[in-house]
Length: 169
Image (cartoon, rainbow, N blue to C red; front, side, top):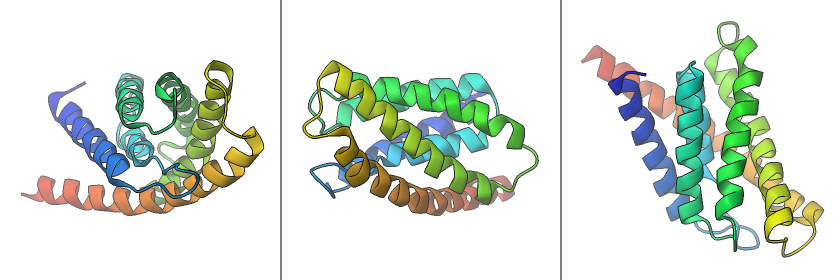
């Protein structure tokens, strides 16, 4: 893993954490996880497993530090690690064959569902849920996936423009 990649990944994770912290709660005090969208951007930009897993672990720690869910620290770390591993395996066959725009839409949509389901499942086991799993899934995970998909595409295009401008300079 080279230094340039690590710096870009660190900046993207920091931006995701800041966006996650600044986003107001939308439904039931829950807010979309923009650090997750940034994590998926990192996964598309980096094709090596080590970078993706390290970024997933750091994203989980940052999300745990900014979570508003009571007892959500451990579920945040676990869900990011599980999500990165699953999405890395899902993306592997499509790395060279599919356009990045399609990959970011697919990755953020499916990945957010995986992340939300994992988070709720782990939180249910460790600390319990304030309401039913189905209600939280429908009211938080589904809208979060839609918002993350839209935000992921916008952020991915912004990152691509920034990287291209930096390469041209």
